[in-house]
Length: 112
Image (tube, rainbow, N blue to C red; front, side, top):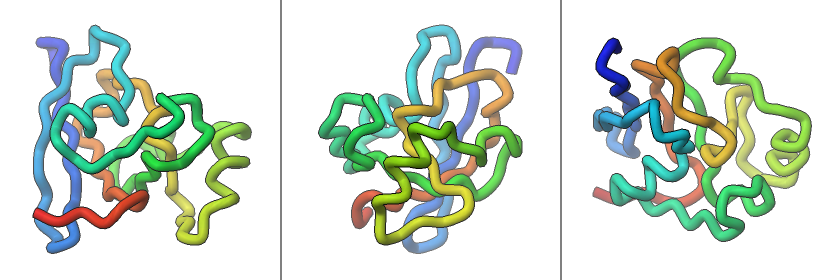
């Protein structure tokens, strides 16, 4: 989008997708946006990729956002529920090409 806002979709347990508008000019992480949008993200480590309490699965979007870095993969490898497109939301900085990204929370049970 040209106005510095992107839309991210969160697929909830019931299969419905909730949209979230987020600015790309504030260097926010996806974790910060999810927390601000009242999702139950614990972020115990404060975004340092040390706790995996912001574990998400990338369902749709730019393929570059489906690949985690090596340190992130090390943390993800400790989790019992891991997918090919698992990511730590704290390691995903918002960018224009994330517009339309679809994620599902895996770190906690989400009820709405």
